[in-house]
Amino acid sequence: MPENSKKMTNLRQIPGPLVTVLAYDGLCTFEFGVAVEIFGLPRPEMGNDWYRFNVASVDDGELRATGGIRVVADGTLSLLEEADLVVIPGWRGIDEPVPPSLIDALRQAHVRGCQLLSICSGVFVLAATGLLNGRKATTHWRDTETLKARYPAIQVVEDVLYQDEGDILTSAGSAAGIDLCLHLVRRDYGPEVANRVAHRLVIPPHRDGAQTQQLSRPVARLRESQRMGQLFDFLYQNIAQTHSVSSLARRAGMSERTFLRRFKDATGTTPARWLLNARLQQAKAYLETSRLSIDSIAGQTGFGHSATLRHHFRQHFALSPAQYRKRFTPVGER
Image: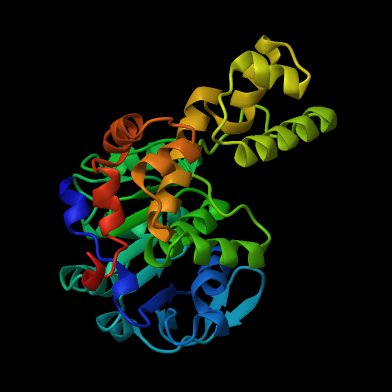
């Protein structure tokens, strides 16, 4: 098992995990709102088994946020002493120094097992603590070179949406923060709960962290955009079928050459790799929520045989399907 995965804390095992979001003078309003929307809104359908939430102020007094908003926090950095997860919104500026008091509070929280999550330029706060040294992290594409130059001990992963290191998670630009927070919900509560949260937000339930930040042609022609959207709907609904470039190109009404170019524009990858990832994600969902046999899951996700599923599962997650399922099985049922 990878070393970082040994450090992972599964919040799902802790009743009502406490999420503390940092606020500061010059607060990035959107990133702060992402954390509030995902972790801070009441969800009666979850009962008491949902995230608790508070806001810790980095600075004294009333805080100015982007857009002329004023914020009054629940408390000071002492709130980090009880947090299970600390969220760091985009920092007020990558050239702005990080207060020593914040660095100390984050280090102490990490030592006692608290998870740390940054959105966009919030990674520069984590970098200042030294906790990312020797580990992988990402940030907005325009800041990756700066992050690499200032903190050469960090393994900066470029052009991905987010990076999950188990106890420390980092995301790219603002919208990628939503993806990362939903990823954490999925990890803590399973895909069905994450899907319900995404449905409430009217956003896709899952974008893989390895998906590219930058699309070479982000706005497709209307007709092509409609074709590709319909194609993805078809693939999700028929994930178990065999698909080829030629069959997909015909369905999209394009030549194979044009289809491959448009597909990469839309996803940052090839149809084969996209399908493999989609099938693995569906297999994970079955393993987490159903009692289907490994053979049945392999058949229903397009792998055909359990041996093929096991091969790809180990290659991508360093676990067998059975080992992964065990994580979501109550101790008394194992």
